[in-house]
Each structure stands twice: as structure tokens, then as C-alpha cells.
Image (cartoon, rainbow, N blue to C red; front, top):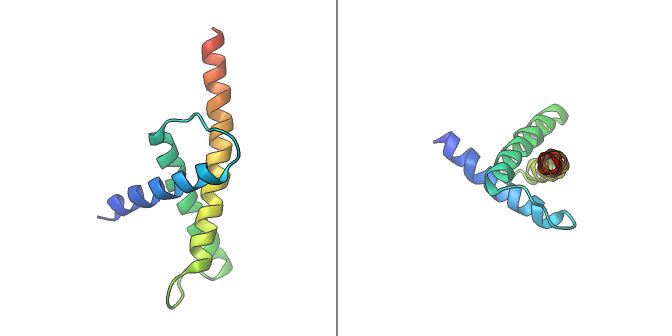
Length: 91
């Protein structure tokens, strides 16, 4: 069941990250979901590192760190995807 939640959260975070980033992203939806999952994992790691991984109530700081991680990874992933796709079209 935790894998299902990871996919759902990754999907939602990836879509929010795509909406936050300027311009149009060309990466497929499955790759956006994977980047969203990676961003959530990165945000959780940073939250644990700074000591806010587990708090009482809603973990707003952890959720914001997850979103920031998703934005960073979706942005970097889009650049890498564009570079790879661009090279593939040239040959």
C-alpha cells in the first residue's frame, strides 16, 4: 500500500511542480510522476535532516520541502530530457 501512496503523491507533486515551473515542459507524464516521487523522497530526507520529519499535526514544513524537491527535480529532469530528446532528433 505504501507504493501506491508513493505513486499518488509523486503524481500530484509532479503535476504541481510542472504548474509552478515557467514555460511548457515536454517530459511524459510517467517521467513527471517518477520525478515527483524522487522530489518527495528528497524533501523527506531534508526534513529529517533538519529535524522536522515527524511533528504533531500536519507536517507543513515537510510538505513544502517535498514540493521544493519536486520542483527542483522536475526542472532538472526537464532539462536533461530536453537535451536527450534533442540529441536523438538530430541523428
